[in-house]
Image (cartoon, rainbow, N blue to C red; front, side):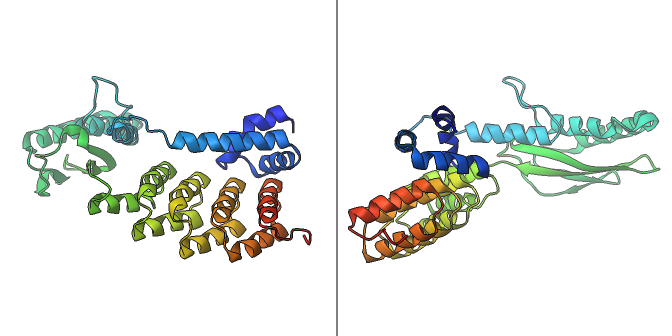
Length: 319
């Protein structure tokens, strides 16, 4: 692996996005190339500096992106400026997709559905949503006074016509809500803590980035520690590490850091853990680093540990 190819891969390596075999080749090169090792350190410092910058982003950007995704899932195209689709548009498009492959039955069934939809349109009022069953409407008691059409997304699950000319349509509705508040607002903090467990890695990264400013809170500290120890995505673990920096002298934090140093499969995470541990040295650090030297197969992490042990006048010659 050449220095040029390493330079192109360092950013991916830092965020844990390389394939295992690529990572191994890059680490082997880093262990023997001081110039590339310095470049990795430079990019690490640059990433840390960029994390300190604040970008002005519309608070509705994430909501708009999610709305576009929901529109696509519900059967419509991404919303375009000036052409925003309401739930009925998405509902009708989903129906069109459902009936598009039914061959010769398409026209009579389509006519039946249109009659049913006309009946629905005449009956549904702004204060009620209804479920269709046998031509009758059951009031679900959901008020729409505070909703605009784009706050509701419908996904058709089944369409079942019968011999009497009626149709039963089963569909799910997703209602979007937007809340605002400060981090000291308990409701906001609960939502952020819930976001740290979402399936979407991007949401977990965003929640870690905000929660890291309140690491002194016990629930937040526990969320950061849980993410560091258990999250499968390296970028989430790196964000959690940033949040733990101000409280890295806490005994519970140092205990988790030690476990992560020995168990995490991402070299960038392990390198940052070493930095946190040696920034506040105690008697346990020497033995911890010596244990790492016995089992660490990453050359760059070994160099970090070796440097720290030398600075503490500790033995490294027995490995």
